[in-house]
Image (cartoon, rainbow, N blue to C red; front, side, top):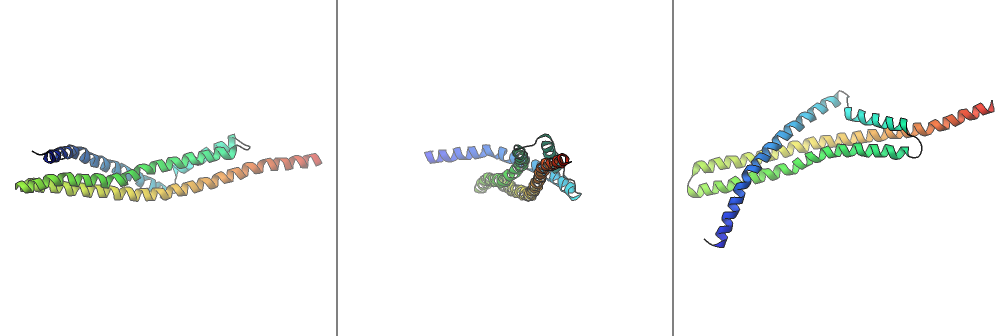
Length: 197
């Protein structure tokens, strides 16, 4: 056996070892997408009814900061809270974007690895092995692409939600800043009126 043949055998052996982690990874992605789909449907239903719990919690946090603090540092505190909330929303999207990329990659690996065994079965005249490996190969492709499409659609919808929530929070923070900056001036005006009397 030549060195090239030994390398081929080694590659075939390594690819055979990878088939189970790839197929298990695809099953894990299916489970993760089912969970993500359920969470997305629940949040979409809540938003349709006008209930946005994450946005409400973030607004309450801004209100607490505005009530507790005042002065020059208030705008920095509000901005820090805004950025933390926005970062949380984008972090959740990061997992979906990862599924968009990993799904087709695992699907392609799950296609090519059984395809090698299918071609070996064809060369040996083993038609049942050929058919079985081809079914596995095509199923892996379909699953990987399906996971990717679902993750992409959920991520696109969630991205628009994150942008809308961030904009609403920014406007709310701006209103709080204007209210807190107008309160001292109103107090000063009332003091001046009292002094005139």
